[in-house]
Length: 390
Image (cartoon, rainbow, N blue to C red; front, side, top):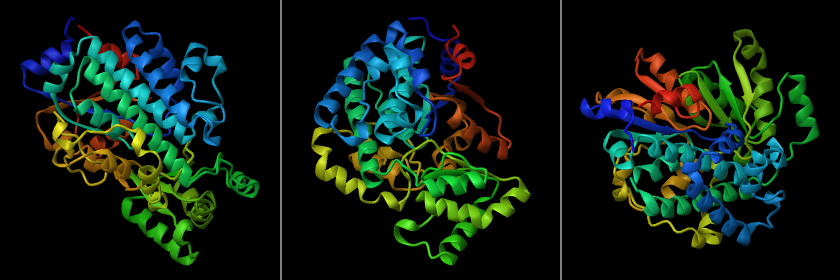
């Protein structure tokens, strides 16, 4: 295999990469269909479909999977794929996104970035929301059949994470009156998560507190700040009715300041206490079919927590830690990517998608800190060409 120019350059200068992976809310099926055409990924997709078949054999009759989990058919004939609404259901989108980003990673390792060399030249890894699980898989530094075995285990794990998240929030349909009131506000496709762009962290925390207190939103009606993405872009998670209540309370102010309120394409309120019941449910009902013998000590590269920024190499078995990090604990993206500015050897970010959302979030922090470092995303055809240049 010819080694890519960028990897050779970094190795010779003892420079390091920061590897990152994206999360929920990104379109993924078209990207995955394109990757499906790559001959180097034939074995990867064979293992993917085999693993999904095992899941379907056990849980394919779930109402959450009413249109199946037949990624093989959807990739062979994209016109046969279900609607975007179905593809965004957590038990479908979580494994779909995971497959896409790991396919991007595997393709890069086969086209100029041999795994052992890439791992040696990587200073740190993380991932936005569910992307931290992809980061943990890559951080194991496994190759060949060992990698494919671990990948299959992780694919089962991410499916059952999404599956149990959806069990806690099983309602895909938003009430007609809530849809209408959102439309009256100029907001489309209400969901249990929404991006609020414009407020600072302190300003949004204050407004969420005021909303919950003044409207008596308690228990499962509470509005939570679930993801702190950039200095002025955060996500709220709650019942659609509670998010509507927040919007109505602050709409005039947001309109005046030209702040944005954009619902995410997702079907469960990730990263908040609403999801507390998901882990006990997983342990009780599904954990026995998820082989997960992976601990922090198995990681060859530091992988950083999206909750508090600690290095997962210090942890024991990673299963419950990763589960809580993605479904229950809030996300602080600045803590996850802090090595980019704290470690002077890290000189470039490589993002494995899907799409370019997480790349942009990292860019928002670098811009706020006036830091310029190379940032390339494998989901962007032009940038992939740069990554793979020999």
